[in-house]
Image (tube, rainbow, N blue to C red):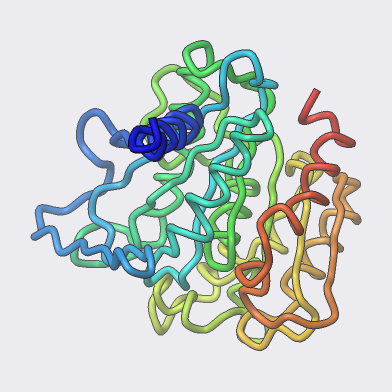
Length: 301
């Protein structure tokens, strides 16, 4: 019996892990929109769980047990300055946490802007975000999801993508034959890049997404604090006041735009922590306030 005990424990641990997921599926069943015929140079740093030069977008699905599912769902967009994707701590770890809370989570490995592989690199990531929302809503019955409570979450540049999905939904950039509403039900933005302006934007993210010499029209279009309307979904924002990479004014300007348009929003600013501060904290420590916001806002029933 003593020899068999470790094996039993291992099987039990594996069963617990499998109960919260885990399936990675292609984002598109057929052709990837706007893709060019180019070599696949995608690579993955397994030590740090970071993806580079993403060529084939996917969704990693984390589903809670059926009896625990509360109907809410979140698309998770890892950050990385539109030059890489921090898939581990800003993706998989968050997906596992959500599933334990009864929330279906979908970690999006989105294409990174690259003129070599896409016709318009400024819309490539947004196509993938809109496709993820569309796909989840189309499979809502299968995944026990309420189509009215499919939100999107993003970290850093992934926060820019999430806020773009929340402000550009009236202009779909994907094929949408069934006219699925690609508006996310809510946004969770973690130290997000919001603006592409000279004074506020994160230059690396802007260069990667729009190029080094974008037009004023492009800068305005992708400065999401300028794109907020009364139809923009509710938002939860979290940032550190001493962030040296992405100025906290990104979150503040977005919050003010939401407030002025009477869109429900909640913002938490930590005085210290710099960029990526939540990566140094246990997930449940900072996600607890996010879950309270989701419950208080009615996204978790």
